[in-house]
Length: 259
Image (cartoon, rainbow, N blue to C red; front, top):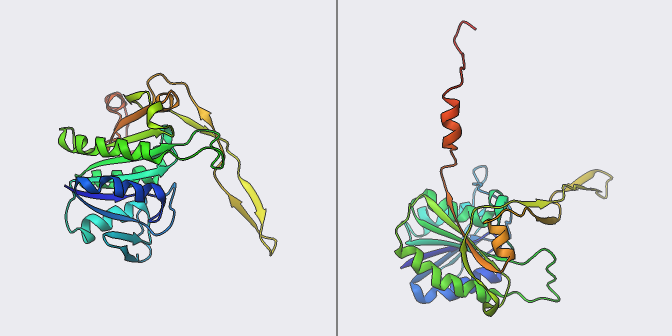
């Protein structure tokens, strides 16, 4: 099995390296990831400047672009073909609910799904008040699950234009309650914009407020992870709302040249 691994935390991130180590016994692993952290890069491609790509160790390539760039480069240039599966992560932090629209981790998997490859995103959910100094990262819980789940997903028959978004609670394996399939939930953040002045007195801004919590939607990924379950959400590439599409067919829209 040929496995392509990417992420948005960067080529040297611990979650990525541990994931590559965990999956190496399943087949040939190739890692193509951003040369630095590109969290919340979303599904953007770099079209306005050239990219650099270099091998930092055998079959580990760093790209000076976004997570989607990395998968694009890997499938079209480095591998010169389709891998059997694209695995993104393990992300340091959750990718739940509406976060998937900003997530570079999910975007790397989505780029693979666009190209007709089975794709899975893995994230380690640290919790609202995670304190790195007081609570450890349980990376092994996420990588152990990935080692079990990746070959299962490759064997199973499901629509190829889907990707699987997997979130694992930051708990010891012994404290995981099980696995649940989930719909997307909704997370909330403060809408603060921090304004500062540079040494020349000109303003600059920091976007991105702090995490405030989630809506208690039964069956959602946010709820399941909070309860201690691994959450698996199948995501469609086709975002069309077909019920609303049928309603729009009944709208009388006149755009004739005589208006």
